[in-house]
Image (tube, rainbow, N blue to C red):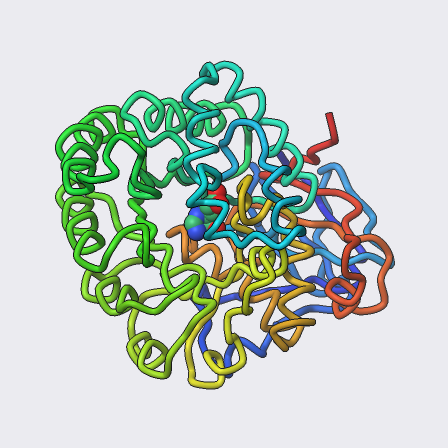
Length: 413
Ligand code: NIG
Ligand code: FE
């Protein structure tokens, strides 16, 4: 797709030199060009600059007067392929039951797994595509989707095949993560190691054969999987060419971050509970910490201590965690606003965290996340706004007028 945007009030997140990710103080810098043009050729960013240097072309031209352009959101952590919903657990929590109590009484991940096992691949695809289309309209241009609500070989592969089909049918960038170690199924309650062996010796082989996943993940948490289980899963992932991304430090701190770093995981996600030694362990590594503020909001649990982490020099990415249990929302605009309001991130930090740092957490930093020549023209065109601060300020709403993937406007279907 070829298109020329002219009179852009402010072109946001412009980086001539590609960066992998931003850490510490760098996160507070958001480079922009005021009164800009942006040229898209064959779906890629071909050129940009001040309006006075705008080239003449025969391309379709879009006048962005009063409006801004930024790279699409990069949502590096979702579980958006799931079956049914869990709104009754939501009501139970209002009545005073905890997330843990609900999970122990047959709710939680096992509840979603039961529903998914009984859902056909076709039906699962149809339920999931609605959510994918929804997040595209909310400005997401790259997304990671996990399995983990199957918990049997058939059901886990069903999820991964649905993700592959979404990837084939939609222009958004999608990465797939195998999260078989999300919870221990009831049949393996007293034999967790047999479950892990099944994941490692059986499912992973098929995943590799059919090239169904990019990453491997595990829920490293008290009552779910231990540090040693995490070590085994990450080791197995490596054997099958899958880099790790772990759910860790959501409710308790058991040393999962340290084992993740030992295995050079791409990201450590959740981090609602962080000790000083956990922050220290992440310093000078290539592992991206990922905060999920919508999960904290929905479950009423602490927010990731973003201020402490960024002030300690760490990078941070923001993602939604879109799933039926802890975060039934895939709205990155809400995530960015909540990061500012509840985690005291500046708008610059939050936008960097939700674009280039999110891209890095999916290994997509060379393709998306900044306005850089050669990257995909996955873009948000805002409504008329006075400053980019208005994006997080107008929480619960969004300031998106149009979205573009590979330079093509994606209209609501
Ligand atoms: O990332 N924490 C683990 N897994 C999901 C939620 C699981 C669920 O309740 O369905 C999460 O929050
Ligand atoms: Fe998650």
